[in-house]
Length: 184
Image 1: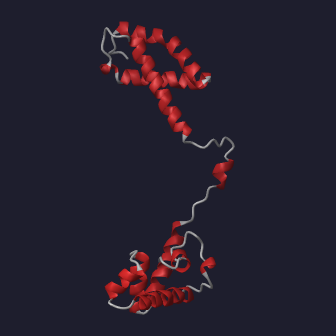
Image 2: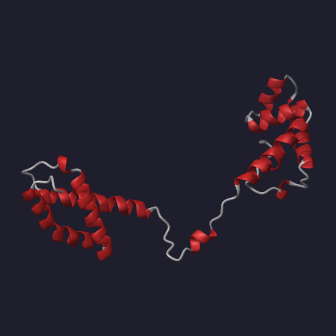
Image 3: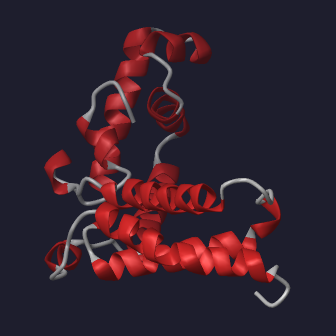
């Protein structure tokens, strides 16, 4: 502020009461308004080189304040109000290591499948090919691919000690392979 023209500095200081009144009218809170005015002044000083002397300084400052308020409003609109922390206390994240271990178990079980079953399961499940497309790729009948995929799914269930698709948690990678007939 020391390099600022004294006249410009005095004009900015003179605008503070009006900025504050405007900020209170926007935010409805004296504390929020004071924060908004402070941020407005910081932005104004940081960008004083973009102000053109001889133009309306108050309008420039009010524009900065209004833009800051609107940006904060848009950001707050996406936030979930949780003053007592009750919502945050319900949020959980599964540990990464469990997913990694589940995937390793799945990969090991997949490797134990006969090559023709593994190939059919990967084509239909992981790669998203239809039974017909997989049959064409493997140069066999569609019924053969369906049979291989079905046997592969059942064998994976056995290798992973699963009784049914209900034994799988939704976040586990195998749940789709056992529950969806057309997908992996």
